Length: 193
Length: 216
View 1: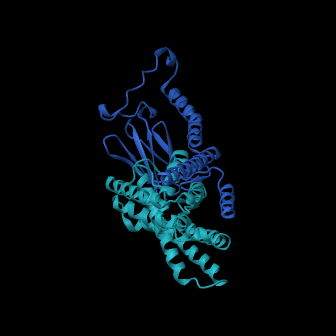
View 2: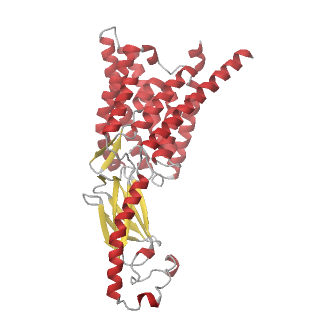
View 3: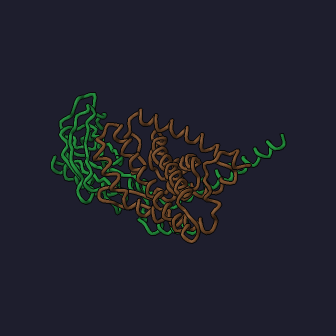
């Protein structure tokens, strides 16, 4: 029994170092463009997966497929929350919501009730000397730098590691011991009765 | 994709899966004698870890299931064994989901019980004497292992179909993606059970008898 189990352990260590199996989805907005990535782990993109974007009123803003790197993008028409759903058709599914205030403020607003509260308008003094173009350039630059960080953070949060495996094994061993001890007590009690 | 996440299956399918799992566990716990508990814990641990052995297959990703070997050695007790492991896979790895736990366990445990039953039925009739017996045990176990995976894939496709998806495309996708797993698990189950047959054959005695019989 032990030898085959060791074989499984070897296979586990040999397989992808970022243990993951659940399909995940991450997306950010830059200006009016929403772009995202579907993946199983950092090294395993979900290729050719159907992606759909839904607005809060149920309309479909976008349908398409991920490319070979698991990425997709489209232009949002309205400044509302976009619910992105990636579906592999075989039971794998992942969801992610891109919030309205991530999209560029100059986009037309959707139905008033549907949008998230607008962030307070930038104070006049802070942007006094800057033109619209400059503001847009700053916005794009910040998004360009922050998006990869957020993507990495999401992937890191999602990654499964040795600690999770060891923790689960501990529970199984504990439950087994508890069950065994309780069953012994029960049968002893029965024979004494 | 043996672990379906939350939000994919429809309510009736979730309810049915939960009911089947509860019933299976009730049956399984009664058949789980005290001596088999350490064995069950070991197999639960193997099943739990096996989900980390992942293979990318085309656009999808699959993992080892090991429900064949669980069914062969534990019979109906495969239900509580797989439930514990699947629950921990959900909590620790994020595989599957709370509402869909019953359906996922059903899709893995029912094939386990079937694979075990098939194996024991075949063993009772076909084995013959040594030295051919151990070889045949291994072959039968290999087929049972592959069968466990195939039935799980069908179960997943069926669950998706009953939740409104088109059956054939989903079935094709899931089954084809799991063919490598069927092959690997076939070999693995054959090796493991073959080894047990040689070293500790009493572990392979049909685990389908009731507790009363086993204690006698």
